[in-house]
Image (cartoon, rainbow, N blue to C red; front, side, top):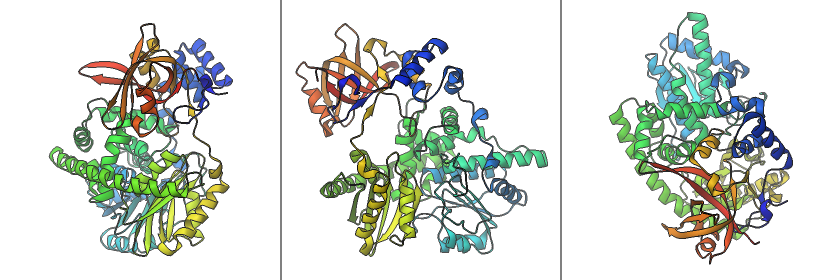
Length: 582
């Protein structure tokens, strides 16, 4: 049954509330754990009972950290890493050009620096070399190094790793593995086909962190030696986990919660400089990692110097870090401009093909490879369907895809590559990359659409808005919001709680900037709350509420704290609305 009777909201969505079982579980949490109902609703949705509430609200890494030895090749990889350290071998780190790759590389560089070693960092150029290890780069690195560590890449790089003659190679990755492994001395990857899948939610930086945990154990037990402080490195793991959209479940919750605390201490010059250039003026939260810091780290790999993000994260000199952060900020501005041009063209093209297909896709001449992934994400958000965007140049196209919950895009793309319709392709459930010959583009996209339809992508309806319960303005206090936030962090796999405010009176509404809506609303009995709806005038929400004419509305969204001139207040991040009389 529709929540508050809203079958079709102003944005075309049905509102769905918690079921009877969730309501019962929430009531038990209120009675047995003494939690506010709003917090109890959130915990009940996550399957937390009264006995587990305290541990969930204050997750301890020591209780949630898996034994690294549960991953195949882990003990061997850690032992080889320590052997290289003790023998003062020449080590190279080959990293992907995104945040996860940069953070993974920075973890290793940081650890090795504290052990008195300076490894070589190599990040491939997105345009000239593409994703992952390539034969020329690996062959060149092998001539000058004893050990090459591939992070956030390498699981499918058979030929490139075979080209590393004279050096040993280990892979620390999380991308979907193939039927066979590359000729590396160790491949540590929770998404290997012979793994259990219990840790499939880890990003690459988390895999690197676990390798360092195991290395620390071996050092203590074998040599009686203490390694670097790994807890101080959780800021990098948190950044990568959020930016790579890894689900915030299990140990990932603890990684992010602890990492945010470390980041708040401002001890890493690279992240301090990045936060300052992004004008962060509050304690770091998942939002800042995903939307302020992450995109700037990514900007180097997208349209600038590929290794700039990794170098910044590993930087220990405040002056150098400030210069790199300013350059990344400039590149991020340029990236947004390029992205907007591609987004408009891709949206028009995809709309012409139809948004009701199993796959929404677009391809264009000269579209920058550094922004196609972001644009694919925008198409996915706009349509609720898996999306692929491809930039064409010469006889080839390079593209990225983003998926929706329940549809494994990475597996479909990997199968497409195995069938010979792609030059190469791979990824994980929610994201994938691919290269395709121009003359096989239509056939490849048709086959990909067919594979996704078999997973049910053609039967996806309009996305419902899931709500955790009802609140009134007078109950939305700063204390309540802080208690709800303790049930976080929120993000992929752990959506932020959304509440409905029923039968509200619009006190004022005004347009802010080009497309945002600011409004105040109340229950008619004195209690009121402010709200902001970003991009509201890009759709029907803004005009309807701006021209409310005194009508009352059900309003829905997420509660957040607004810090302004030393004062903290509660604000609703408005996402949807429906006429109260409907």
